[in-house]
Length: 67
Image 1 (cartoon, rainbow, N blue to C red):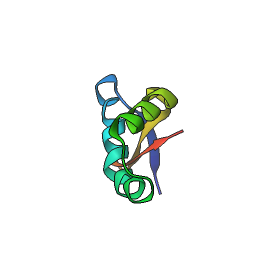
Image 2 (spheres, one colour):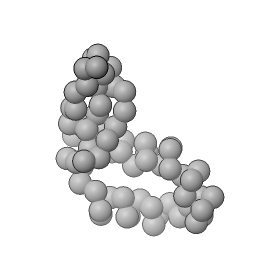
Image 3 (tube, rainbow, N blue to C red):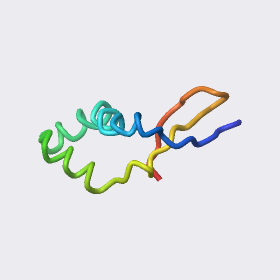
Image 4 (cartoon, one colour):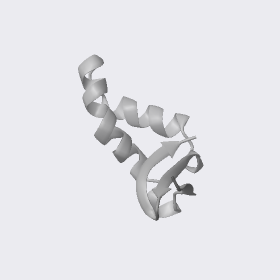
């Protein structure tokens, strides 16, 4: 299986919270309640944009990781 990691472009760095929110909001909301300002602040102050990479499989974006 051919997998590559590709850093996000500066234009894409704003997508990371939106992707996190899309997948994690239902889980966090059910467990604790979703506080948009709290989640955004924690996300943007704890995680650096350069830590995020697209997972590329056979030339297509297959996912996003934070490493």
